[in-house]
Image 1 (cartoon, rainbow, N blue to C red):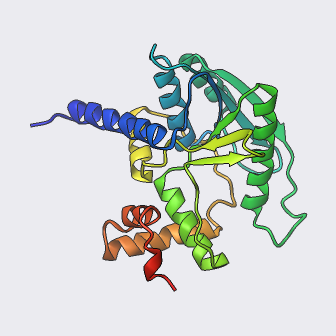
Image 2 (image 1 turned 120 degrees about the vertical axis):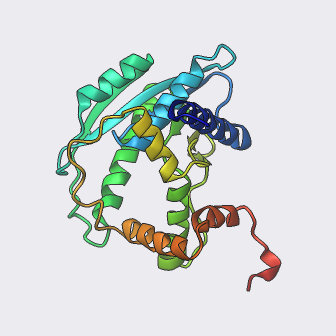
Length: 245
């Protein structure tokens, strides 16, 4: 009989293995890389930072990790900045903290989350340039990619999602997503096992989005087909063009 502690060790090993597989399959990390990790304070970005930092301690690995948190002053959410700083110190990772102001009402046609995300991403690009990082790692996982696929199909009539590796700015910069093979349930379990501190106060806009609605739709789909999310993710790599209009 496998004990709880044994199960946790097996799960953790598998968690790291899936990150390593994504890194290998998509060539996400290369020798000498300087990687900026966007840390929101949520479970996914903390898991990403911890795994990349712990992998970097392996003598066979040769890359540097820097963490950055962007605090948005105009949005009523709260993250424990000192916890993030201490988290990075324990990992031996340099921590960059910046604040920005975002007026989400300037363009009423754009959802508040889109506007806020755009400004935070822009600041991360600026920090990456400042710290000579040619790669930005974000904590999006498999379920995020599946939600993006359905959103693109439903609202824009296109088939696109979140690539594991995206070349940007004329191939001078790369955005990577090392958690792409992991589900939301897996990152949640990892965060619980590692006892990550939760955000003090969540963003008031995060539940009033198309993404949240699509996530609930996927829950309904999994009630019909338990492997709906994993199958939709697999479908993005198994396109049969001969059977499309």
